[in-house]
Amino acid sequence: MEYYVHPTAEVSEKAKIGKGTKIWHQAQIREGAEIGEECNIGKGVYVDFDVKIGSRVKIQNYVSVYHGVEIEDDVFIGPAATFTNDKHPRAWLWDDSRLCHTKIKKGVSIGANSTIVCGTTIGEYAMIAAGAVVTKDVPPHGLVMGVPAKLVGFVCECGEKLDENFKCPACGKEYPELRKYEKEVKK
Image (cartoon, rainbow, N blue to C red):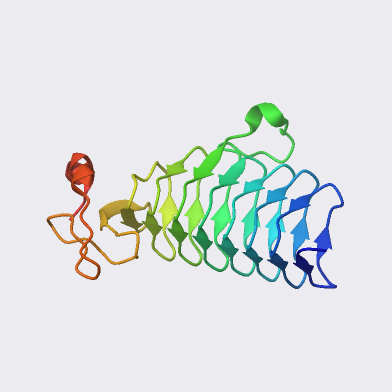
């Protein structure tokens, strides 16, 4: 095998796992799931059927990634973060017509214990604060926090908060294209 699976993990023979990926204690990977290369899937993580996860993704302990969620490359998902896939859940009313999709774009960081409500897209390199409840789309590089999550600023690819001129104080990179979202920021 070109990837590692802890003896207590359960990985379907019908899942595709990329080279160098590590799947830890008590994780479950369902049929049709695709996980890219060099990923780290933490203890107790559940990856539902047909979920697509890119390369170099780190999913910390006790995260459930449900059917309808797609995660691109270089994403970090903190412990106990939650995804949903049905906007109007009822235990007795489920079929694929109720499935609501969520897209997590390249480089996103999602803080511990946050909830991502289905139907949202989180833009490239956005950062979701710990405990936030995301109910609407997040722009690229957006920094959101709170319940419900509100856009409070922007972050660089390196993770530092951008200044009022959309420049990173740490690495100096500038993002003038983010000015179009400036009016959405809640101070």
